[in-house]
Length: 344
Image (cartoon, rainbow, N blue to C red; front, side, top):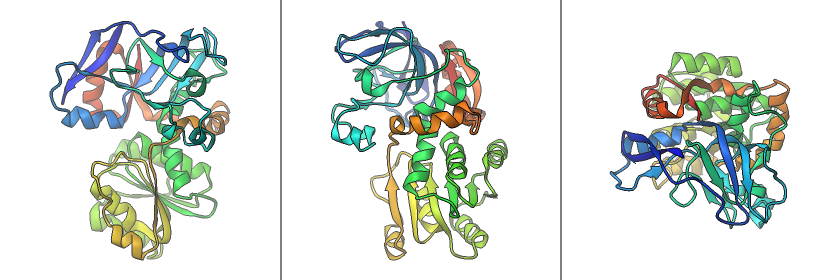
C-alpha cells in the first residue's frame, strides 16, 4: 500500500510500504477515505533530524472497516468510522474518566509500530474503544466536519472545557490555526459572551468572525496583552484557549488571563517549562489542558455537526490526493492553507 513517510525536516515522501493488517485480536483495519495534515505535523517538518528508516505520518482519519480481529465486538466490515488521534481500550480507569489519551493500553498513531493515517489503510489497535461508527455514508457532504472529530474540533473543545468557558464568560483564543478556529466554535457553543481571537492572517480572522469571534487582536507580546486588557475593562479574560505551544504564546495566555482565570493549553509545548509561572501563581490563574481526549467528545459534538449547528470542516480549505501530500505540507508550512484534507 502507499503511505506518507517523513525522513527529515522538509523531506516528505509517498512510498510503497507493507500492507497494514490485523496483528492483535483487538485490532481493526480501516481503508482510509479521508485524512488530513495536522499543525503538529509541521513541528517535525521544520526540525526532524535525518532518519534512514523514516516516520509514518498522520493521526486523523475517517475510513471504512475492512477487517476486525477475533475479539472485536462492536464493529463490522463496512462500517464508516472516525478514528481519533489516540487509540484507547474504552474500559480502563482513565477511559471511564473520559481521559482516553491516558489509557493504560493506549497510544498514538504515526509511528513504526502502528502506522500513520496519511495512507491508503491503517491498523487501529483497541478498535472497540477507539473507533466511532458514523451514521452516514463515506461520501457524505458533512465528511470534512466529521473528520475534525478525530482531532481539531475535539482539541478546540478541550481547550474551552479546561479553560472553564461557560455562559457569560469572556474568552480569548491564542492562535488562528485550525485548532484555534475550532476553539472559537467551541467557546461560542459553550456560551462565551465575548470571544477574542489573537491572530494576524486575514483569511483565518474572517473565518473566526463567522464562527463567533467578537474581536480581533493582531498584536503580539506585551502589546497584545495590553490590547486584550483594553477590550476587557483592564481585567483580562476569564478563559484563555492556548492553541499554539510556543513559549511566547503561553506567556501571552497567562498575561491576558484575569486574576482567578484559567488557561486551557492544547498547543503541543515546545519547551519543558511553563513560562510566566510566577504571574500565574500570584494571579491565581489555573493552567490546565493537554492532549485532548477526542474520543470522549465525539458523542457530544456529533449531533451539532449533523444538525448543521457547527461547521468545523470549514477549516479544511485545501484537498489533495495522496501523491500530493508533500505539497500539502509545504502549503500549510507557508500559510497558504489552514488545514489540508487528504483523500487517498
